[in-house]
Length: 214
Image 1 (cartoon, rainbow, N blue to C red):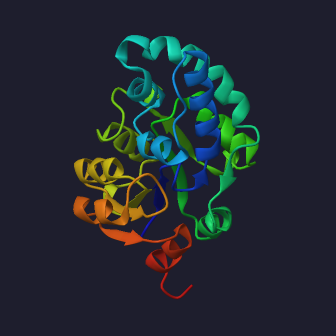
Image 2 (image 1 turned 180 degrees about the vertical axis):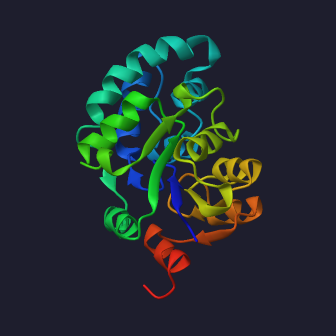
């Protein structure tokens, strides 16, 4: 019986790629770099914003880029984030079944909270944990294990849902059953190769895994 659902955020519950694309290209322009396509940027997210910027400007300019990117991104999140289809209604569905909800994201906490607050669902999550609050980010298992400890839920009663191969690796390292949803940065083929517990095309399909009678 599932008592706890831990979700990645970007590409799993929400589509924040337009906001990320705006902020990355704003930063690149300020630093004299050519813009990148939305698809190039989408493929680069998931490992934290410093890693994201370093891929486009190099390690030497990554910290300088972050000082431009972060203030712009905080504003861009105000109107550049939407729930993925089926994600919003999944939250009360889980609550009705007394399933605890948590977020484990490699985003900095300030951006994660801005997204959840903007969408009006911050209070629906029992724990929100991000890379800058953990000893190590995903794919290390620290965040998932910490969430289980905080909520006093066994790993066997927990399900982790993410959109990237790094999420699947994180779940495997923490020995928590992981569902991969093919709406994010990795292709379905890449997700299959990482061998998650299940792969679903849309987050709404999660209901049938939890409760086949729903």
